[in-house]
Image (cartoon, rainbow, N blue to C red; front, side, top):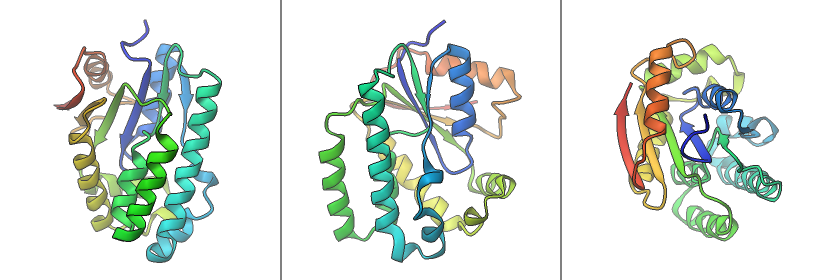
Length: 211
């Protein structure tokens, strides 16, 4: 059975389980999967080692990658009958607000608004919320070398910017889900509860739920 919404974006911090959940939802709904191409970003490892030097380069690179990927998806009519992405368009704004100084952030926002004006917006964004220590534990488990230097302060700043961004969302639906240590891959009851939350006929704006 298809979900209520045809374009669903999964969001969250590094290691929150975005890609795993997106894959499972696509398998369940026989949908089309849209995954972020972060492995192709040559600036990402450099950013984690020298954030001030490479912040603008990495954010601009991600902006271009996301734009080209979503543009191709639109042209190929990939948003029918259902598409699940492991990122949302607004992710670029969240990260830029956390990493760039005011002048570069203003320029970045102008570019964002020009590039994304005509792209489709997710009908619902599902944000997977985890505590910072749980996030850091998952980063360690993933074992990607360049991610191990990510500090708790940076993760906390990102989480705060995500919350601010989603709570100001007016044109789409934002579902902020406190996972409460639930394992959506192995806990069927928690997964079923999440499916119910996603499929609710909710107004635009944000809502908060706990699994």
